[in-house]
Amino acid sequence: MIIHKLNPQGFCKGVINAIKLAKASVNDNNIKKPIYMLGALIHNEHIINELKDLGIIIIDEKNKSRLDLLDLIPNGSGTVIISAHGVADNIYLKIKEKGLDILDATCPYVSLVHKKVKEKIDLEYDILYIGAKSHPECEGVIDNSDKITLITSDLDIDNLDVKNDKIYVTNQTTLSIYEIENIYNKIKRKYPNAIIDDKICMATTERQKAVYESPNVDLCIVIGDSRSSNTKKLAEVARKKGLDTILVDNLDDLKNKIPNNINSVSITSGASTPEFIVDEIIDYLENQ
View 1 (cartoon, rainbow, N blue to C red):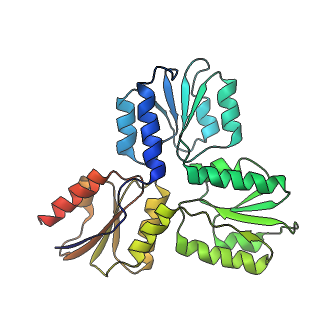
View 2 (cartoon, rainbow, N blue to C red):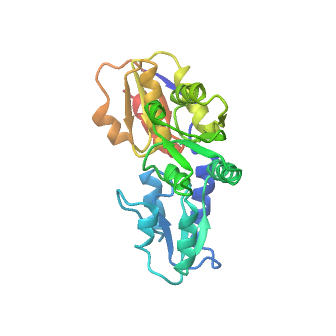
View 3 (cartoon, one colour):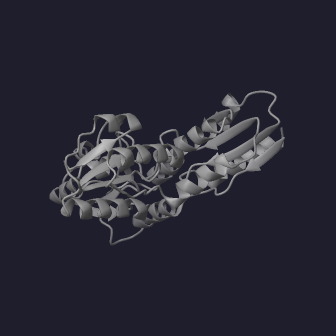
């Protein structure tokens, strides 16, 4: 079998920093215990289980916002880890009101988006934020102000009626670089004076370009958690290129999904996918 391992692979810098911060907190006597993780640190079940094994209490329930999840944490002594996706200002305030300490693992790229949006709101701009509804990174930005309008697709632009001449447009860091170009172009046609500030992170951009520029193969294998935005976008880019594509979480998942009579594959992975999982899958395919 011909295997094309697309680069980059492994964790991005934001994920590396978040995991390092969370793991170090366990043995740090200056960090108040117990330690709670507000939502998933990153979207990867393998890492979440590893943190659980270290004694970190994961507070995460489907369809509950970060604000709702905070109600599940008792008041008093302890520390809350903010995930790499970031949170809105009201989360920080509520954590402090509950008498808890904060350990902030927000990705620096996400923090930059928060900073830019707040600066523009202070300058009386209306904000158009392109993101995936209910994704924690998106939730963390749009919950900061009623001056922020969420754009989930180019269809939302048709219903926009912004009277303010000052418009700032930015986005979630893990979207498709190919989809967002169309959205930005449509906004620019409707609001020529809008400031466009594309904030898709480098890790996301490089991986998507690697997929789009990769050789044609029988199958593209995208490895990562199905909740991960950047992982799902890799699969979308591969399909846009015209490749038969499967998204798998691990080797067992691959064995259940891989078709027969495959002679060539390309392999990519999300920025929160442990590299050992990629290596296991490659070793398995090399022996087929």
